[in-house]
Length: 508
Image 1 (cartoon, rainbow, N blue to C red):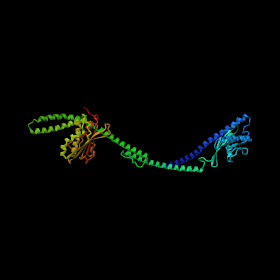
Image 2 (cartoon, rainbow, N blue to C red):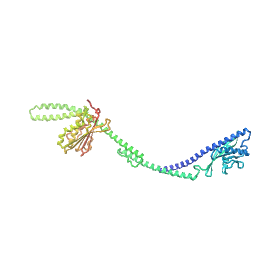
Image 3 (tube, rainbow, N blue to C red):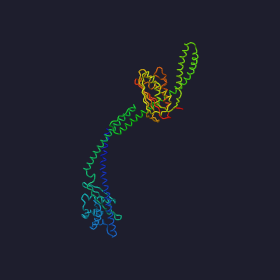
Image 4 (cartoon, rainbow, N blue to C red):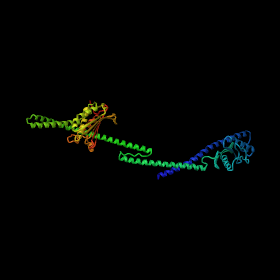
């Protein structure tokens, strides 16, 4: 409905503009000719004033005052001829107030008088109009102009009053005949109007098509924005829409993708902060508990060592077993204290390929017993890594041990890749050590908790191994990532900065 109203309004506006343009064209043409005619009339007045001044010096009567005499008629006609012969299409003459008649009419080819009025060459239709304009100028004492139709053409008439001293005695007039100008031919006018109307209607229809296409695109964008409110992963389909709609849809899709990435990044940062806060609180608690446990353990160890001097073999065996358990507890306390203390690194340039190769060699015999095969791929371009070798070896050992444990029942393959890859980090490219095993995998609801302290899926584990690995990798300014699915194996990626001086929390 709204589009129909808009179409009608546009059509009417265009038709109105068409007729206004035609009228303006006609007026513009007439204005130009009217200016020419006004200048011709002024020239005629100047010629008359010159002749009148000469007669005044000779004490002769004014020509218009004596317009009934043939000499005056001839003199006025001569003045008209002087002006008319220099202007193409212009004819002129005079009006005498005392006679209320046109006198001294002349064209470049004709000079004369008709019935003593000098109006030879004018038609019966023209004389009343000429007389009316000339009389009006003389009576109103102001220049007068008029445009009137003459058959298929137009006649322009201009008159300027003449005076003798303070008396107005008549006027000088000129006429220009225009056989045809834009807008005077009705058939042509209607034909032009119809053509412009058809063009206007075509423009309106084209406008409606464009508006309709834009409306469809706007509705699509509105629907896409609504879907985007529910899910940032949604995308606006881009079909055969106008370029503007496609550009807007592409911009919205890019915005949705960017927002989703930023939200995910912020979520990861929040998870890391919460994890760090939990670790800090837990570290303080562990430090206190470990110190309290260490002192009683030392006392118990001393008493058991004293009991080992007993001659009773059973007592000595019991003491040996107890001391072994105390050593295990003491090792656990040391690990707890190590976990609670800030990580202090001794970084040095390291050949990462060689370091990974040495750690795998330490597990080669254990892997052979469990029918596990190692496959390595070294990039050969990681010598610029600056790390604490002993701490990073601890991380690799833990990851390799977990992979062997996951494949010990059926055997399998552990693929280790050492590469360098470009990242969004300001530190440039990073070294990447990737461990990919074919073990049992980790359930999806467990993967997010594997770095939590004391969380483990092993019956004999303490749940501190991966937590310590996480802290050590972060201390190196790197990142450890784990992706896994139950029954599909596990992939551990360790990213380390390759430039020296980028290690966090390091000390000499």
